[in-house]
Structure formats: structure tokens, C-alpha cells
Amino acid sequence: MQKRTDYKNYFKNVFVPVLVYGAFTGLLVGTIVFFFKWVAEWLTEKSIEIYHLAQSNPWIAVAVVAAAAAVAFLAYLLQRWAPETMGGGIPRAEGVLRGILTFRWLRTGIAVIVNSWISFFMGLPLGSEGPSVLLGTAIGGGTCKLPLSHDSWDRYIMTGGACAGFAVATSAPVTGILFALEEAHKRFTPMIFLMAMSSVLFGVTASNLWSMLLGHDPAPLFNVGALMGSFEMKDIWVPLLLGAVIAAVACGYNVVVFAMGKLWGGKLKKVPQWAKLIIVFVLTAVIGVIAVGNFNGADALFGGGGLIVKLTVYEQFSWAVIFVLLLIRFFMIAFSTSSGATGGVFIPMLSIGALVGALCGKLFVVMGMDDSLYATVVMLSMSAFMGAATRAPLTALVFMVECTWSFNNLFYVGITVFTSYLICELVKVEPLYDVLLERMIE
Image 1: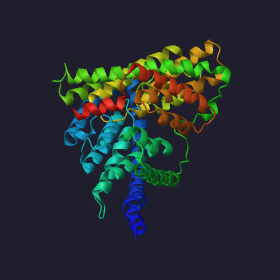
Image 2: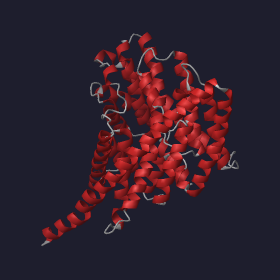
Image 3: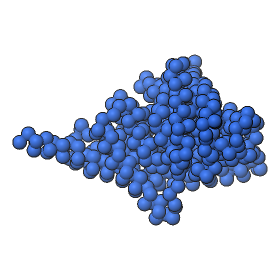
Image 4: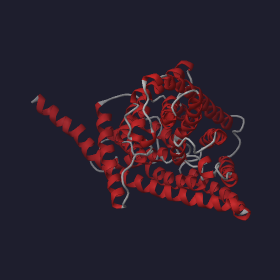
């Protein structure tokens, strides 16, 4: 009798929510996030075309800057309607999943889509990954309202939605599952794992089916595997030295983001939110208008996914251009994040790591490294920067494999990630998402 009762409880409290509600949430998230990203990419392409026109026509340039101010005010009105969309989507989603923050799922879902599109169209250096996680969480919140759902399932179902949103946005399903364990909840339970896996598998399946229907072939997020050479044991000094450099830059980046947040919340606390958004939108438009040639707006602004691919080509950029792009993206991403603009920092953060890796790669070639390893250094740097800044080394390690479909350098990826993570832990600089979440709680 006891075994039969246990079986019924397991079927009711584990099997049903995981396979029914988790799968349904995954299918919804996979479909909605796919089209959210599809429109975002189209808006980005049109924005780049407009900036190119503005660079050759001063009247269009003036109109772009004026439009940036007007659009910023529209974004402010949407944030007034749904304050949950302010800032990065991942910290907000983590707060909801841990039961620290609350949100209105339908209002948040609508506003995060529209406000993110506004940010992408104006070229803010923010990505779609964070909004996709928050959108997935919101969809999970809506699924929780369906008949027969139980209150005890709510956070699990929303966790599944968040993981599916991340997996679809990055084309990295295993990383999406790890996101729930290492970043969102920072703990492992069978229920979290099962719900995350169910939602991610169904979400990625739905996304891939839509992609096939529209004639798109599945591909890694950064299709650069053919450019990546393989390290040998004699090259072990490269990942060790690279890990130390990445740790220094990651700690510096976190400190700058935290300092800007304190500045906005302290000495500049009286500056209204609409003014903050207008400043960051207008500054973005000005950079997009004046950035021409090899130093162009498409590389200095936007999420940075295309820039990462370009950086893997050794002769694509000179030292000077890479350094200027690093400075602009380093401070503009931190500034945009601190202003409360809607958008994610995941891919933009990876672009900072890739830029540091490009500079290090060129330096290492001068120091005797084979130039065939240059692209590998760029990608290792990208992965290690994310792991160090967010303190999610396992997620960074797996993401490196999934975003390139390359397993050749897994050992050396581990060395780089471990070195950067260890140094950041020793100097006790707090993880990026944890501090951003604390700021939202305050």
C-alpha cells in the first residue's frame, strides 16, 4: 500500500508537472522566443543600414540622434507601465525564480518584447539573451495559471521557461539546463533538473522546427570551429597566462558596473529615469553616426555576436581598432546596464572577452605562439570572461563547446576558465548577476 501511494504521489507531483506543464511551457517559449529573436535580428539589420546612411548624410544623422531621444522617452513610458523590464533580464528572472522578487507575468512579457526591440533598433550594446530568459520566465508564470496546476509547481515551471528561453536564444540546450542549476538556483535538485531538461528539450525542438519551416539550417551560435586550431601541451602557458589576464579584466568590468550603479543611485539619484535613457540612447546614436570604416557602428554597438565572429580572423582588425572597440564596448555596456535600459548583457559580455582575447592572441603570436591558434585564444577568452564575471565556470565550459561545436580544446578551456575563476575568487570581487539582483531588491 505504501509503495502504491508513493507511486501515485510521484506521478502526481513529478511526472505530471515535468512532462505536461514543463513540455507545454517549453513549446510556447521555443515558439515565442524564436520569433522574438527573428524580429530582433531584422531590426538590427535595418538599424545598421540607417546608421550607414547617416554616416554619409548629415541631415539623416541629425534625424537619427533626434529619433533616439524620442524613442528613449517611449521606452521610459513602457518601463513606467512595467518596471520589471528595467535592466538585464537574467538578474530579474533569478530573483523571481528564487522567490525574492515578484512580477506580473503578462505585462512583463509584453513590455520586455517591445522594449527590447526598441533597444536593438537603436543599436544599444545589449543582447536578446537576457530578455529571452525573462520572457521565458513570464511565459512560465502564465502556464502556472492553467487549470490543475499547483502552487508548489510555480517556481519549477518558471525555471523551465527561463532555461528554455536561454537555450533557444543561444542555441545551447545543455548550457540552458546548467543555467538553472549553477546560476538561477545555485543548487541541484532532481525536480529542478527534470523540469529544466523537459522545457529545454521541447523548447529547442519547437525552435528548430520553426527554423526548418523557414528554410534555416541549424548552426552553432558562433560558426568558427573550422578556424580554431588545437593546443598542444607545449602551449599550456597560453591558457594559463590568458586566464590571468581575463581575470583582471573581468574583475575590472564588474567593479566599473558596480561603480556606475552606485553613481546613478547615489550622487545622480535625482536624475529622472527618462533622462538616463535619453542620455544613453543619444550617446549610442552619436557613436553609430561617427563610427565609420574599419571602426564602424555595427562593431562598436549592438549585441556583439557578429563582432565575435569577425575577431576570430587574424587580419580582420588592427591592434588600434581592437583597442578602441574594447574601450567603447567596455564602458558603453556598463553604462547601458546601469541606466536601466532593457536588454541583456550575456553576449555583450562575451564580446568584451573576445576583444581581450584578440589583443592577447596578437601578443601571443609575437611571443611565439602559432597564428593558427589565434581564433582559439579569442574563443577561450570569451568563455573564461563569462565564467569569471558571473562565477559560473561549468556553464562557461559547456557553453564554449556548444557555441562552436568544437571539442578539441576542452582541457585547455578548463585551464583558462579555472585560472580566471580562481583569481576572481581570491580577490573577492562579487559576481555580476548577484550584485545586479541585489540592486533590484533594494
